[in-house]
Length: 256
Image (cartoon, rainbow, N blue to C red; front, side, top):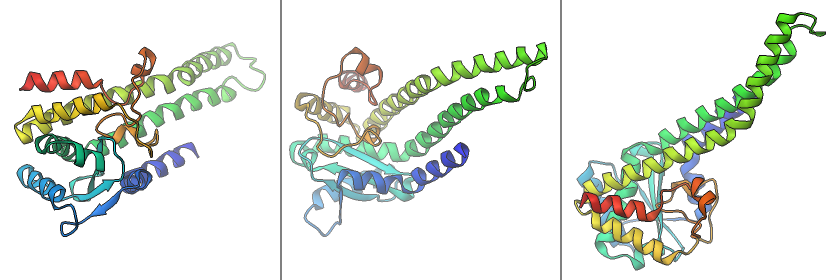
């Protein structure tokens, strides 16, 4: 049953995760003929430069600076920008943000994240299997020394996995997510040929430090920067979905 639930959840996330994330953010789709040709044209120009099909473009009615991309592949992708990003960022800064998000699409980061989640879910299921297997080892009265020893080993393995797998799994997931952010930063800089644009945009996000109003833990990892705004303590940094902004800015300026 756990396996079935894990597969169904992964499939829903894979095929409909973008719609769920956009709905949670309150994003509204825009068209080229509407009031935001500036945003549309910038996305279109970068897609042409990168050889990507045009994604659906959304605006999020939030005054903080942020953005995210969603979709399982370039043919089924969406990019969402906050109203604050459009209003507060200079042309080259907004271009850097859009290039970063398009890089997530071209790098198949959503597909990669789905695979990671399924594998980590499998680890949790295995820990449960080890624990439940002990009841079938060595018979009902455990009269066999060999069966009892095998049961003890399985109990030990199961307990270790049950205790450590959620923590290790979360750390692995977050570590991979952070590395994909660095990759998208560098890929976006390669696309615009101007790393300083994205670096300045990230600095503005850090200086602003405001949380988004409509945000969920389930979708926080999708955003350009953490949508929660607060500067975490040491323990909080361990479980951050994004690398520290200062490290990303420094990495971009090394490229420059």
